[in-house]
Image 1: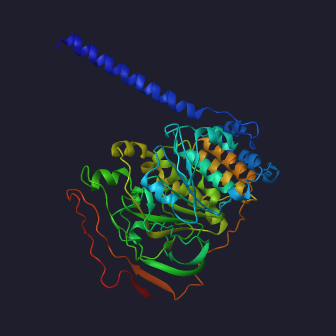
Image 2: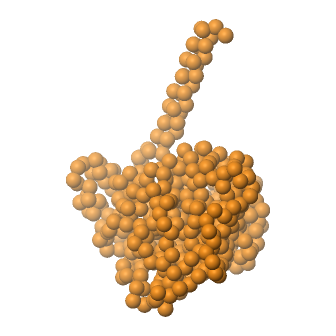
Image 3: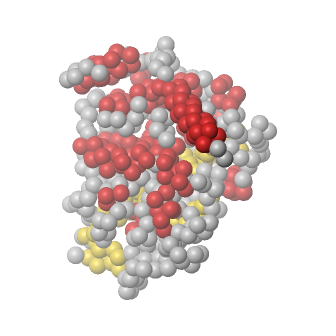
Length: 476
């Protein structure tokens, strides 16, 4: 090939790269367009302008948000009694009904709502599922609709609202490649109960360790804490309030792309197993862990916390949602809990390098986000104003963009419009330090086999197993 042709090829390649980035920027600019709904409760244009002014942000934020009259929001007509149900499963899909969706639809006592998108088959149908097509979503009349992009996981937000509008007191959320192991949803399904609570001063804990996988970490876990020693100290506490319950998942659990690229052989599916004998565990206030949207139960007090943001990447949105909601739980006297494996996932095909790029924000900002949330406080007089206050603070600190704060306001207004009752603020300590059952307890988890590079499909144990029963309990 002549030098001329080589030069032309290089120039053509450079032009294509420039065009690609221009198209990418043009595509992303659409998500940053700033339009304010006529029925908005907050003067977002003034707030955004004030954020650019040094030393003026907090005062303006307080003035703009503190006086919202949530009770003045018009109520929508309630659905008929025949359409109402207390337990709902919510998922989104671009596939025809999968085997897992069919399993979910067959669970007795639950109704399923499936949220479609532009890639979902137009003829999607299953006799035991409510399907929200793109056209159906428009007809629901929710404020959040016009803020939600297409081809976005955040369209799931419409499914949450639909379920709440139709009587949901409990929502189980999952994906179309995930289903309960026993064929039943086996969470606690109540807001208060007797649980083991971590006794730790750490700002993060790795719940996978508690369930026998001490060398695995969940997606969104701060990378600089992966090597922290595990926590074995717990308190057995009565009447613990846990309104968000996350179950760990056997098979191909929710780990980040760094794990997948470095811990297993190419083209080998993960099939790890967690310890089913480990008891559920609750995180105390000021201690966090990432939780996702794949095997999670929300009780009525926490349904407001299901909102998925729209301005962060797909592999980030549910993790950022989880940290945000976790912090707000503390203002209700409630906490996040993790349950032993009660579902299995055989993950849809992923490009792990693409996942790595999509997860960039998790690697860079998870630790900073956790530290910010632990130190964040609000003096707003009602809970929804605090939710909005934190959402604006997330924008100020670069974790979200302004559209997510606007989405939060629209979401809260939609909740009020469909009759969801705002939870009462309750910041009383819930640590049970003075009301434990039998004193502090040491729990040693039994290590389970895990995947390692160059091991092929074989799972290995590289951490010594604790002697004795699955969990050794010693009162101290």
